[in-house]
Length: 123
Image (tube, rainbow, N blue to C red; front, side, top):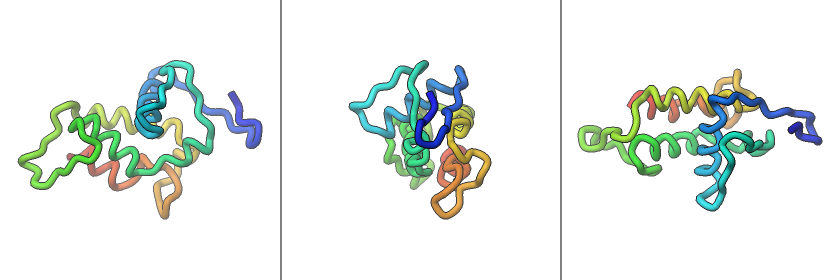
């Protein structure tokens, strides 16, 4: 479905769409539910995504706690998923970001290419 104001058409990839739907449910709050196969988001909604939102979502996936604390690291290791899971989430979310080829800089670009997102994958 194209955005009438801008003519922007949200891309769709069957393998990535469930990741985006689950992330947007987390991002928009517990009351939001989206069909993992048919939901569409506006360009404006996707541009609101910040690196901290993705970092918190990945924290929920890895630690079952979006506000995780890795200090000291020996006491708090990821137990719910691996870095490869985070890499696939990052790739899926990046596919839908309107400026996906632009690195994250000064609050603009692709938030999946930011340091906080890459740091949690390294952890």
